[in-house]
Length: 138
Ligand SMILES: [Zn+2]
Image (cartoon, rainbow, N blue to C red; front, side, top):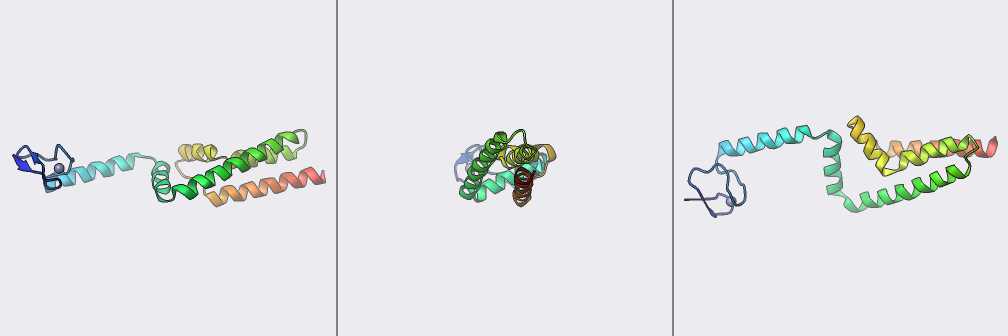
């Protein structure tokens, strides 16, 4: 029997990895594990990786952003539906849809790149401005 380099528990002589904690027991095993991990990470789409890290860093502000986006999105959609015969509703519908978090996530999955938050908010503001202008002026 040998002892694990990480957790000091006994493992079979000549093991490459500890059967208790999974730690590699020699340089070769460590290198193999590292290249395996890198290969796995490469297979994840960039958007998913970004999401993993982003949510790990600021879970609270991210979920607050999401709740605000949901609220603003739904209010906009309801408002848009209320003015449906007007051309303004098209712009407001677009704005409301774009700002909803699931739409951003879907876009990230399809394109492999996350929509920039500022770009989304910018688009929302422009679309609402155009929609409101159409509603009041026409
Ligand atoms: Zn161990």
